[in-house]
Image (cartoon, rainbow, N blue to C red; front, side):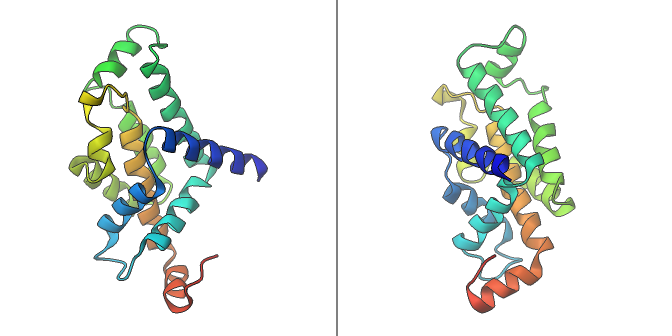
Length: 172
């Protein structure tokens, strides 16, 4: 349990250092789920995101992807990986595969939401996908979309907890 907390804190630090906030991810969750979870607010969206970010398999995917982006940004990968990451080669696909793996932890609802939001580049995803910034976010843009999609899956699979929140204002 202590290790999960350390991983969680590490992920939050890395997201923040790469200019991604919980509120940014919550905005995507709300965009995706507003028609399905009436009354969905930032508090509940962040709660669902936190549930995802505390799951070990999700943590491993997120840490791996962000680390690869950081190493590429520092020019520390060997060729041809450095070139692939710098150009965000369109046929690479491992970034999407990692994101789909993360999303699939929460079922088909998450996987379909990931594909949809990845195509739209909604919210912070557009900024992360902007190549003109000089930042390398090959994995991060997909992982942030997958985190949001997985949070949507968490909401879908926890209807009773969502209903309890709307009735009482309390979350576990």
